[in-house]
Length: 580
Image 1: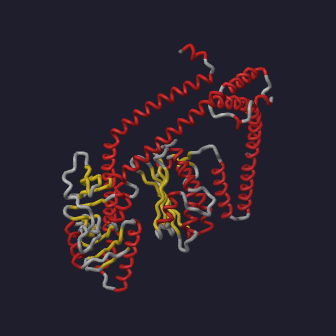
Image 2: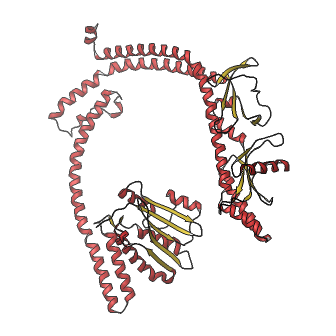
Image 3: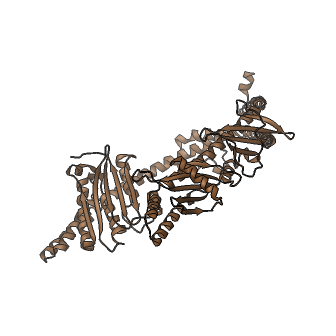
């Protein structure tokens, strides 16, 4: 048999080999499917139980967000300040302003969470503030919620649905922490869309086809319709967290999960067996049809492949033999048209051979072109050196002419401009000392002082040793330029721009700040993401940060902080590096 196979033609060998492989694969697949059929039931049950576990975790994660939201509202410094001022002031107009401010703040918080009906605050005097869709509750219910929140002493307390009110709520006492006296300022209550949370979490899973119940002790949290399944008579769940029960003659998966986050919370699910099993049957049918179709296609391809493989190989061998003694530019090395080549190994060999010939020709042409490009670049580099020197000489002539005519301001501006041009055009050093960079800033400020006069107030706070730290060239000057453009120019009153340094345990922080109009939170977020579009054509923040990262690593860079109406602060983080 081995001798006969060895003497067969290549196309017969390929066909025989493919047929043998398909027979082996069919046998392996058949026995594998039979084995899978014997164990898929168990895996199906485990999956159903795991879906309930994952869904319960998703629900609890959303409820934890609500807890964090109640904490953020209760500890919001603006809300606490407004509540304190509301208790202290006696002016009705002032109280109205404070109430509007508290309501606006609640509207901001309510907009962050889609699972919140409304956020309500009741101050110590019983005044109510709310944002969102109000939930109707009786006075007794509201009083009970406040009492429960006060019992928590600042901790979150969950208010479960009852017969009077079917909505779940998170309540927390607002306690003053500015002076650490923890006085009672009021109560924050967040009404939660628990039904929407559950619907979104179980959407797309098998749980959506069945029933789900959430119970806290003896109270049913979900659903609120009172038509939930009776889970008390199903007995004890086995060790796998599930069991199969028959209800009205139909099989159901019954699962339960005990929460480890919320005390006494238990999740139950009852999913029709057929809702899951139908998918498995469909998957088996698709798999069987796909396998048969693939088998037929492979047989057809095997026959075609075995008939066509020898001729392209013979053609390729002939061309390879002619290659050493032939002209590379001759058309006979095009072999065959690209669209006629198959995508098998032989076709790849044809393509590779033709690509090799083309690349040899391209390398010869490219090498010649590179030599011409290098010569052209050298000429342009020599020519470019003439323009800066001509500009320096012109500025120097203007400087002496200004001095000769008694114009010290023009002379000073020309000297500063010449210094800035010399530093910006120079390519000798990518890293300079902080001292040299500050000298660039001072010359830039000198020019701007003539423009803005008393409106520009500039201060520097530096110690002498800090001046030897290394920093990428043109890091501070563009930030000062941005401060003048975005802070000083829009203002009528004087603007103060300050550059200072702060030493931290493992790095040095250079800070450029102003008292300009600042940015809104939306603008600040766009600036941090690099999405803010500006009219400036100078060096941007992204350019500065990228150069710092390239020079020092990912742990360094810049940070932008701003508050609307209070100015902007840009912090530059660089490592300790003392140069000579």
